[in-house]
Length: 295
Image 1 (spheres, one colour):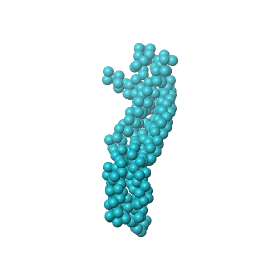
Image 2 (image 1 turned 60 degrees about the horizontal axis):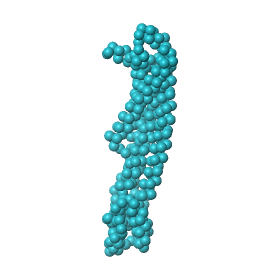
Image 3 (image 1 turned 45 degrees about the horizontal axis):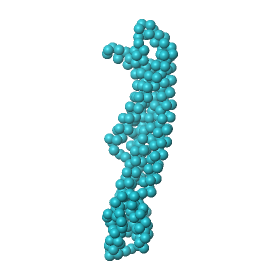
Image 4 (image 1 turned 180 degrees about the vertical axis):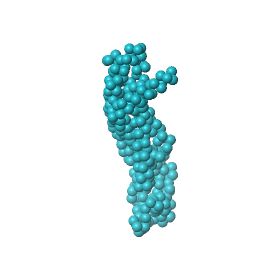
């Protein structure tokens, strides 16, 4: 049993070396296919992360574009709290907003060189009971003479969800097409190897070797091609994603980039297993077809 396994592995590596050029083409194709698949998957995950972050903020922000006293602010806060669907109202002065802004972005930007005064308005943050009430509450808020604008995230969420759906559909179609093309290349690569060893296979068949015995070295060769392609894609995507995520975190600190290492590991593992499956399936289809036609 163990001698057979050793024979299969040795023959697989020998076959890989013999057709090194075609094997490398297959590895490269699998790598490109899996990198594109990984990019699509990470894009969908990050867009979903943005949707979740925006959706979790069931708030309407009312802006007051002029100075108001604490008494006026208190009266307006009470008035806004009476609106249907509003569960909480918080007054945020422009000084408080500026302080928070400087805390979040002051380390990355020299704000004193950008602005000379506090440009932020006073605002009220209204927490709403359900997402469906956001637009209704916003419409009621702007009816107040002191409020110049009311913003909420409902429209943004809808647009991002539409974008996520479009990316999923387009990405899925792209991945399927690339996977089929990759599978065909792997099939043809292994097929050339099988045909090059037609004489060896004939001798093996004459001495009683079964089709299963003949297939195993080629299937292992396909697995080797798939594993190398999967690991290569993993390394490329990990290095690229880490670099891009770090740059985005510095340039756009408010953007909720997905950095969960557990979830990222799942994506990378899926890529490696995907490459292995493509290589193994391509080899099996190829060698089965040749054995059926020739032997």
